Length: 81
Image (cartoon, rainbow, N blue to C red; front, side):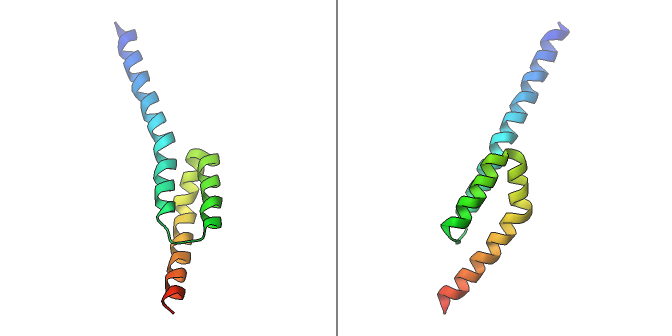
């Protein structure tokens, strides 16, 4: 009987791991695509996000999102001129 409970918990743990390992890169990619920056920047960050999986996504949210926000603001300012 206890093996059934352990099996359910193992299944739930694997679902959480799968959700995080797919959810983080998807969320990072959606966030990145919405930025008003060059395609080269987007391609570079997409490679980092998807080749690095969870670590790449964390790096993007820690460093890349702010960097792309600054570039997007710069692009917006230049386009207004």
